[in-house]
Length: 126
Length: 126
DNA sequence: CTGCATCCTCAACGATACTG
DNA sequence: CAGTATCGTTGAGGATGCAG
Image (cartoon, rainbow over all chains, first blue to last red; front, side, top):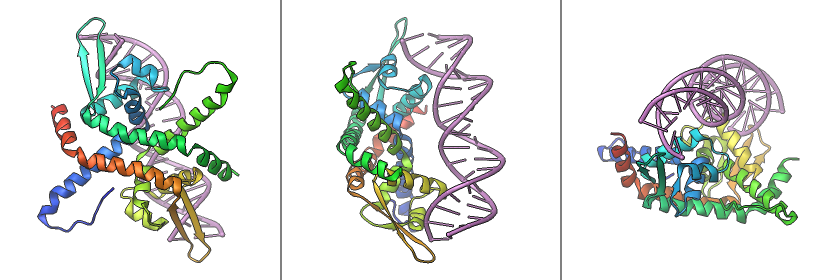
């Protein structure tokens, strides 16, 4: 991250604030569940249970927890249909879509370098 | 991730294998310390202690642990100078550099949407 | 169906100490 | 300086149950 050296000057105060906020966002969002949710959400709108099925291995708790976090940061929109049984739909917002682009980049990267990585790992694991 | 439905056909076997490997890599690499290390390593070569200083808040243990993981996947190269005291340098490999591009993308994203995110968070935190 | 809360377990993590 | 190992603590995360 572009963390630079701050002086004690007052105009650096909000720079430092922005920086710590950026760091906080970074720490929260850069985790596998958030990424996988963003990725499977893609440009579709999905219900909670659909996400639960499509994001392989995620628990009920982790899913809600990460969805709350993403909602809090405004990356997903949560739409509740007041029916019975309830129907809750999640959609990526524009910032969410923008982030998805970089997550996609990581997916591409993973597949592109799968060979390199597998070979490196075999070499490492004596 | 591009996880699709597999049939029982034999030629799907290695697809499934590749997929699970991709998933494994994804899960390991998509964590904040790995990202912060990759980001601060940039195109420079850094010593262990330099990384320790520059990656704010990382513990000795987390740093070694993540460096091993990144080395195992061939994302960083570890060069030991047999001097006394020892001098160990870490450099991003080409796959590491490639991944750095997407991590950079996330950093840009973070700063670009800082306003949106902060506003959304204030709205959420009633 | 979705969400929240509770409990419980285990692994992540930090601190410390010791080796090369 | 860099790495490994050990220990103790905390928190993440799974399971379960209940409410709306």
